[in-house]
Image (cartoon, rainbow, N blue to C red; front, side, top):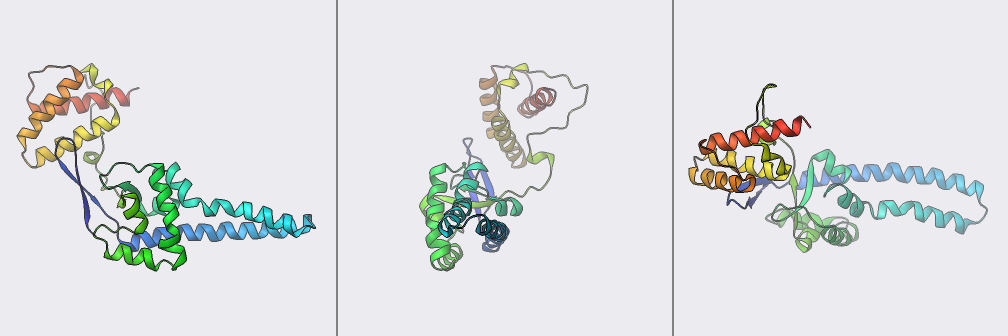
Length: 241
């Protein structure tokens, strides 16, 4: 399956793996399995209500209310869990916008509405064919919402997080790093690692100047030393809060 190339504000390309059709089907089947368990519980509850109530219409009405969570499952799960259902969590995938940014609730609404075409009316054939023949593995709903499903599986390494290995007696140099957010530091580190890997010294220098502006600092350290120090300082302060 293809990758989704995202260009950061520092003009650095980051790649995210677009999930295969098989992974999407497995995630869906996990959700369906949860539905079957829920349906079984509803059936037991309905049987109990038939004993408690003599009015069949009352029982039917309560049963339909109990089925509403399944009907809106995809919508509220995606909104509450940042583009993920239980199946997607298990498969470590999520829905994002084409530029890699988080999808909005309106995008999830479009995806949910078009599940009727993608999955339910034609038994999944429309959605399956759309994913197979789409360059980025998008079903009809994804095309309409401008979203893709990417893999969030991590090759577990400290280089892929904002964490830095620091000694217990580490002494920070720049106290203003606490004005940064985790998102800022993650972007700085991603750009820093890619620039170092490709020996892109121009990007390193531009990144250093940008960080200096954000922090209001000035240092005689070389670009690599400066950024590395900023990352370590941030981790020192945040890990000891």
